[in-house]
Amino acid sequence: MVRIGDIELPDFPLLLAPMEDVSDPPFRAVCKANGADLMYTEFISSEGLIRDAAKSVQKLDIFEYERPIGIQLFGSDVETMGECARIASRANPDLIDINYGCPVKNVACRGAGAALLQDIPKMVRMTDAVVKSTHLPVTVKTRLGWDENTKNVGDVAERLQDIGIKALTVHGRTRVQMYKGEADWTLIGRIKENPRITIPIFGNGDIDSPEKALEYKNRYGVDGVMIGRASIGYPWVFDEIKHFVKTGEHRPAPTIADRVAVCRQHLDFSIRWKGEIVGLFEMRRHYANYFKGLPDFKPYRMQLVTTDSYAGVSAVLDEVAERYMGELTATVQ
Image (cartoon, rainbow, N blue to C red):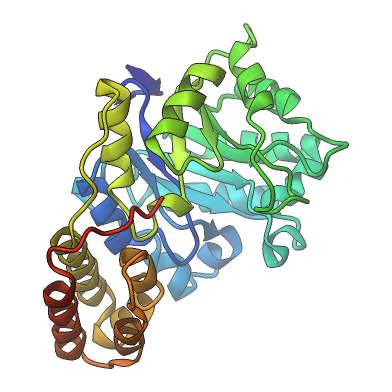
């Protein structure tokens, strides 16, 4: 059993990464149904939440079946982050997570996300402000460091634990690396081996198969793994990893009927939550991933991303199911 404050998770839990423009309630719903143990909202700008910006406020939407779920916040101002934590806590999540890992330019260049890896004292003050502003467990997601010369995550882990965070997730790249190259989990393993560290340590980066999840569990001793890109269009990755860790055997790959059914569930929720126009539009980023590996799929993909009615998209999905029924589908990983 892994504990984050009062939250109990199963042994070696699988976490769904907070991904901007991806980890919304419709996406989280299909991941939860397929084995995600702990999920997070898309990251929310503290400044946007303080201003009551509609997009930021909408990201606070959580549902009972999603629990346990965390709201992830990012920002550059210590006081604003504290106030933002108070606002987010009123949405009644199970925990608050702070993003010190986002590497994208429009976040880091504003002094938020991974930029705090260049100013550890400020990171500590900000985390302390958040911890003191909420009754909920506070967790942190970060990276190895800003660049190859400043891989300071070991020091970060100790200092943030000392001021009260209840779990730490580390992505095995520096900010300068962005998402390029192979994630290095060596420092993540060293944090877990540190006798001073008593909070759960979760690893993130390049977990895209059951074999790799089990290998990294055994090699680095992490309490669990966080999965991001590998789950996009393939929420089955969570159950597949759980089954492999438990039995050493692979589950059968999802059939075309499975893919169409889950894609349709995702689409239906997207429309219920966002309305037909926005729901259809934002769903377009997912189709290629749901049907990755199908031969000669491009004409269907073009129809899915250009059709502007639910009935039309549903009809295309019916065609896809009929066209590819019985064919073996390539695994997404």
